[in-house]
Length: 160
Image: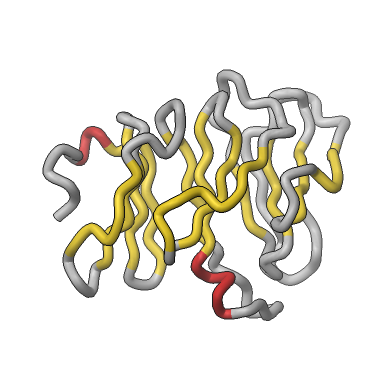
């Protein structure tokens, strides 16, 4: 059972990967629920300054390899608060990415299949690609006709 104060209608986004359920609440909190134990492993009450609208786990790809500890990483996004990367082994934000513009639309983010890059949509009609180890962006993909709400990496080739 999730935290008693978090009801299903309080959940803004969630993600399931292996035996973990990640939950973002409208109250700005985030919980990690372990299905094997049937308990909340950790909770961050104020994970973002606004409700979390996107949770992305590092699922990798059959077409590339990455270190096993990389699968502990996941991203959260909230309007006006950028993208944060978290590690399942510790209940704190590891790094923050906020060079993209995200003032009012729920722009999503993605982790590359190799685990080295993060992409994020933006309200300035661009998509941003970050190196996972750095908070500054590597590439700004421009010339989109409107806000970039969703981004994804090709699982087989290094393309956004």
